[in-house]
Amino acid sequence: MTTDLKIGQLAKQVGVNIETVRYYERLNLLGPTSRLPSGYRLYNREAQRRLRFIKNAQALGFTLHEIEELLDLRVSSTARCGDVQRTAEAKLKHVEAKVRDLQALARALRSLIRDCRAGQPTDRCPILQSLEKNERRENHGNRNATR
Amino acid sequence: MTTDLKIGQLAKQVGVNIETVRYYERLNLLGPTSRLPSGYRLYNREAQRRLRFIKNAQALGFTLHEIEELLDLRVSSTARCGDVQRTAEAKLKHVEAKVRDLQALARALRSLIRDCRAGQPTDRCPILQSLEKNERRENHGNRNATR
DNA sequence: CTTGACTCTGTACTATGGTACAGGGTGTAT
DNA sequence: ATACACCCTGTACCATAGTACAGAGTCAAG
Image 1 (spheres, rainbow over the protein chains, first blue to last red):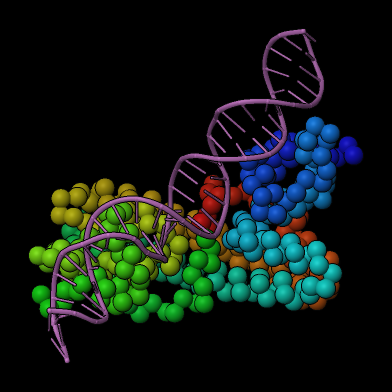
Image 2 (image 1 turned 90 degrees about the vertical axis):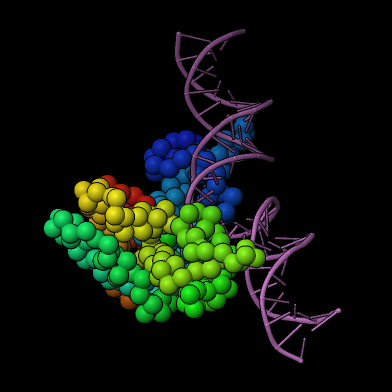
C-alpha cells in the first residue's frame, strides 16, 4: 500500500521517537502491520490512527496500561461501550478533584506572593499552612489520577 | 521533647512507609530532627508537618523535586523576599497551567461520556472515535501537564 | 560501488517514586 | 537473660515511560 509508512516516517508523522514506537511494540500496544523482506516494519493507516489514539489518550492522563485496556475494548466485539464509559467517568472524577485541589493551592500561592509584595517577613508560610493540615480528604478514590 | 517520634511512629502517624521516610531523607526532603545515642532518628512536630506537607503536595501532582522547591519557599530569614516571590510566581504559573490542562481534560472526558451514552457496541464507541480524531490541541506550551 | 541515511536486534541506561531485604544493633518486658 | 519489636546502614530491586547506544544490515543516489 502506498499509505504504509516505515517506522521513521510514522514516528515523524505522529511526533514521537522511533524508539518509543518500538517500545510500544514491546508492550503489545502497537505492532507493525507487515514487514519488508529486509525486516523493516511497515505501518498502515490503522496503525497510524492507533498511535495517535495512544498519544491522545496519554494527553488525557491515561497510563499506557489503561490505554491498552481501551484499545482492547475496541477490538473485542463483546465489549460494551459502558465499560469504556465507566473508565472515563472514574477518570473524570479524579480530574475534577485534582482541579479543586490545585485551585486551592493556587490561592495559597497567590496569597504568599501578596505577602511577599507587602515585604512582610514570611516566617509563617501560607503554602505550608494550606498543605500541612492533616484533614486531607480521603483521596477521591485514586491519587495518581493525572500521573 | 515528648512530641518527638521515632521513625516508625512518624511513618504510622502520617501513613507512609518507614522506607519512604528514609528515602525522602536521601533526597534531602526530610531529615530527622535529632538522633538518640543509638542512632535512632527522632522527628519533632515540625518534621511531622513537613512530612504531611510532602504527602499532600504529592497528592496534588507535584514531583518530589517541586515539593523541595515549595518547602524552600518557607522564607529562611536570610532569603530575600524577591527570590521567594519569583519562585512562588513561577510555581503559580505552573499550577495555573496545570489547572487549565486538567480542565481541558475534564471537558474532553465529559464530552466523551456524553457521546458514549448513545450506548452503541464498542466498535462504534464515540469515545474511541473522538480520541482518534487527531485534533491536536496546541498544548498551552506545556506538554506533560499532568505528569 | 561507495556513501549516507535509514533500519534491525539487543541491551543498557535514565528519571521518578518508591519497596525489600540482609546483616547487624537497641530497648524493654517478662 | 532472652525474646521480640524496633531501628540502623547499605544495596538491590520494582514499575512506568521512555532514551541511547552498539554492531549489523538495507536502500537509494551519485
